[in-house]
Length: 444
Image (tube, rainbow, N blue to C red):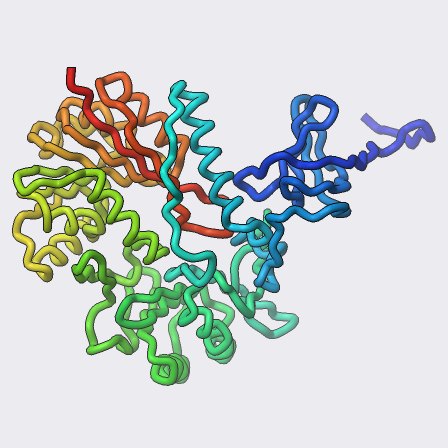
């Protein structure tokens, strides 16, 4: 239907309001009440009065952007990164860590209370440092033909476009210092238009670069990368369509990439999953071991075990540990890590834990304790089987509070109580919430 201009038809107005947020949501937005409606305000913090422009107005809530800060919150910080506000990686650099922790912890508590009726006091947030904590990052690569330059960085907020980063105070210092020389090197390659991404990893024995390329490298390209590796003492791996090739070594004592935890050495492939925050990972493992209260006679089950991040420390304290993982390469790596560390009371099994698990090898065995560390989708398929095993203690490590709460319901209705709950600040300056919970079998 054709519409004609009418003087009476006007664009919707954007109202400007003056409010004082009372709390912070997990996305770093101030939350306020105005005329009986909840308002989420970008750029506003609790205890500061702001003028904000409403840009989206729904029946029960509205979204607004801060246009003017009238009084500053004591929690407001000056972001140290020049890309903050444009880069989509962080959304809370303007927020003091104490407020980040309390808002995330409150979100987990509110979710449990709403879904289960439980009001469980949380322990102190497991935390290490605000910045320079991330030991792994994938950088997008995008060539601009008109400017004849390569963009290297992270996605912009709500966009597929890249922010060409010159710094990143989230990365461990060794990786941040590689950003400029890496960009300069990649810009010189003959296949600069055919690069996919660059992944930087900081192992305990040196830095790694995994370069995804979509066309063959020339001899000159290989030489340029080799010179980068030699000068900056990094190992470089080339990732093609169906292979990964190690171009240079560069690691301490020419060892495979590894990290250390609980006096153990865990080797990994550059493309294997590892926890990106090494310090919080150490603290998380210590807390899990404490909660499980492992005895020399215990048989322990570790589901979604990866390459043994929890499995191997538990094996130092228990009689037998069985790790179950859905990625066969990680199962092989876990087995190898057990051998390297001289642990012969560990068995790693390859099973898909997102399918019916009732007929899997571990499902009918006896276990005293269970630990699980699933992906964001949770462990819905495994929960009923865990209950049938009747372990004394269950530690659930979660990267998604929604699935943690849903999976908890199965335990709560089958004779377990939620004994402990702690938030893990694995990703400071972001809205990511990780947590861990201890469930104990109720003795009737």
